[in-house]
Structures are given as structure tokens and as C-alpha cells.
Image (cartoon, rainbow, N blue to C red):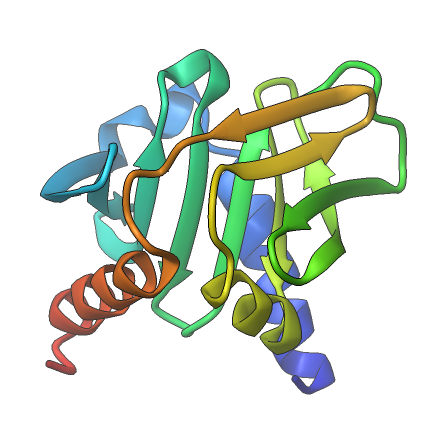
Length: 164
């Protein structure tokens, strides 16, 4: 990934975290399909398609895996008061071991971009999806294989972007 892609990804992550009441009128989530125990959502921000996200769990403990219009994968989890900069999301993969993602955090969510190696490792993952942030540990039973989730995200993003 080149420097401009990383800068664009970081800017998108910050935008993702900065959604608040002032922008609520131009932000909406449209359910696309169920997948496993979650839902694929098409996310419209500033009245334009921004990304598709696989959303698992209730708001207070929600996992989101997103694929945006710039073709970057992102992950977000609930924020953790114990997490101090640098913000690092620690993903436990089976197989694949521990992957550390640098991210950002606001009062509600922590998010980071997935590099290609981590994305490929996640595709091989089996079992509950576990992410650590600060002293917090989150675990989700996704109810679907990672390749199916990623395929649904890419298909949603391709359709919404007109790429089919």
C-alpha cells in the first residue's frame, strides 16, 4: 500500500469515527442482507455511498468489518477507556496467531485499517472472532465463514459503487 493510500485510509478512518449528531441527517445505514449472526449494511455518509459493513452484535459490543469505496478493509470495535495511545487492536486468529492493527479511538468506537497480510490471515480464521483493545477483550460468534463475509462485503461495495 503506498503512502497516499495509507493517508486516505487514515482520513477515512477518522471520518468513520467522527460521525456525530450534526451529520446524522446525511448518514444512514441500509440493510442489504443477513450473513451468519450479522447483517451487511450499505452506509451512506454525506448523502454518498461510503462503505459496506458486516455488523455483528448489539451496539454496546458491536464488531464492524467494513470494505469501503476505496477498496480498503477496516475493522471497528467498542472503545475502551483503558486504551491509551497508540491505539492498537489485537486480533487473535486461528490459525494465524496474533495480529496488531494500529488505529484511532473516540468515545464510542476504535477503528483501524487492515493491511493485505492481516486481511489474508483473517480469511483463514476459524472459530470465534476475538479482538483486544487496552484491557478489554471482545469476542463474537459470527455464524459464517470469513470468506463468505468478505465476499458479501465486496459484492455490496461493488454494486453500490456501480462496479458490479
